[in-house]
Image 1: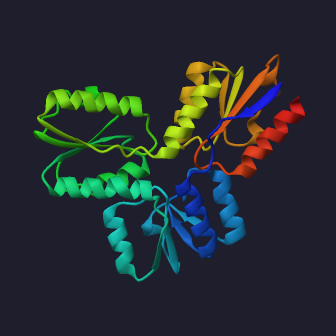
Image 2: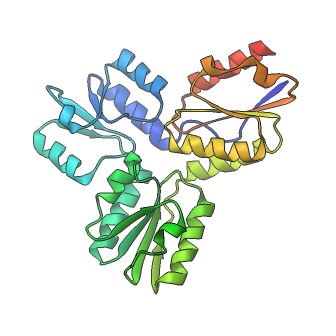
Length: 275
């Protein structure tokens, strides 16, 4: 059986930047999981004494607080800055952008529509920058009975699929007079999704590696599953099952933006041992 990696996969710019920030900070606490990968978070804790707090209310005697890649709410950031603690911002620049757009457009009187998961930390943070009406949706149907301003600004969670974003935009253009569209889906998401789509159309079995609470990893798995029935989402090599690879000719592998190379290599090594 041949093993082939997708042409684009794994750590994105924002995650690489955050990991480097955390390693250099040492002896710090992140506000929420720095990234959506438990294995990497454990490595940072063990090797660099970077612990994870669920929120700012768990801070005690920490001297340094790292803001997670997904960002935090505006009120939490303001409270942190007033606390006197050394605040180290590891928010991905691709997440900071929709925060800024949300604040600017709501200040100008636009209703804000966000394509994303209401409970995702990135969206909680972005939404907090809106001063007026803000609606978080996953489907255009959710907007059918909403009385929107005739001026609407639309943004997306950075890890969502462009096709669905376009559907929501098209719906709004038929519903209101003015729609300002900001494509805030990051390039790494585009590239990883296109790569897994192409590979999964040729593969007999697909392995997607990443945190099961990671939005971008789940999107990769969803795309792979559409093209290749035998697609599996795993966090590490211990979840692999030898039976998955019986009578397969091509195993495709991709990984979410928060998945480090060392985890990917362990998965490849174990699959090669199955061979």
